[in-house]
Image (tube, rainbow, N blue to C red):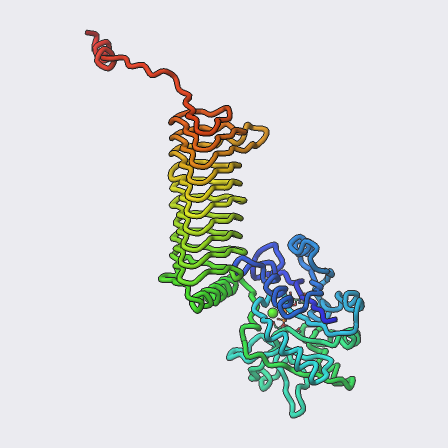
Length: 458
Ligand code: UD1
Ligand code: CA
């Protein structure tokens, strides 16, 4: 079976951080995750990640999803792959893809097409290359009439070799059994005294095996981030690629300022995205919506024709035709029904809100189930937490909750219930009832004038 080894041992000193470089994020996801997902989409899911600097952070991030192996000393790319030998020996029958965990733009097509060439040429190793206008710093591909003869690192290259524009991307397909054999032959006789994985090319040829190069039409596969400036450029680049895809799909953007859309987000046709909109994770936005300005939506679904303005929505579902905002916080586990209205200045948490219900101003709704066509008055609070436990409030269809009502949970309002403004509800209310809880209002006539006279000593 085919498998992959991802090199993620690097510290990235120039990042100036205590974190392995492949964990730095591009568009919300670690570069390592971009590489993993390229492997997965190319059908390679048996993966071993080689960790080194702060390896425990790699383990924490992966959470056991893939095998890892530790490279405790940084002795070169060949040495890094050697740490994966036990993983390779689990099954030597297929091919192994080796990739760099800090080059996030490797793509599925390149992986698949390179494998096809690798198998067609019956190669022990096939290096994936591309052409760069500025090849400085990369290993150069030495081509001959018959194919390739090797890869020369910048530091070991002659001035003539430095002119070659075809460079090593750092990604390779190996026949697994050959990789194990060739790793045993790599030495560190070079300018950097490192075990170079690139030596597998000439070693394969010297041992009567085939070696080849697959030139990818996509030079972005080479890009590896070394410092924060490059990381920012990667983010810009990835951001624009995602936005371009949505433009092609019929999404409207008039200004991209502050617009960040992560790559798994889906957006329907004719939806308008306004400045300051950040869409994260597995978010799905319907068609003909208006999202923004100043919106964060994470791992949530938003139905067609919904408006979200100046709001944050996390791990929730908002149905179609809803009007959210401005100044609204929808916290995890909410379900907002069709044509509801939420906000402004409203927080909703772990609650369901029925169709056509309006929570139009200044309210907190937590741990509650609100029916259809309910009106929640301004200043309503579901008092869901007594300092020890959290309890639920239930509000029946067609109820009218007066302004500044406190609902002390657990409490249940039946169908079409009224609460008078300012009521603190401490008991369940039956269907069709009015609950009013108020002191008797007194009017003390002439009070202000008497008070003024006392003050003036009259
Ligand atoms: C390597 C290639 C070069 C290629 C370039 C593409 C070698 C000898 N050279 O160069 O031909 O053009 O990648 O980017 O392979 N790593 C470890 N442990 C180590 C050394 C490296 O895990 O001991 C990891 C790094 O974290 C990184 C990857 O391997 O993810 C590549 O290492 P890097 O030092 O960037 O390789 P280069 O010398 O730039
Ligand atoms: Ca590098």
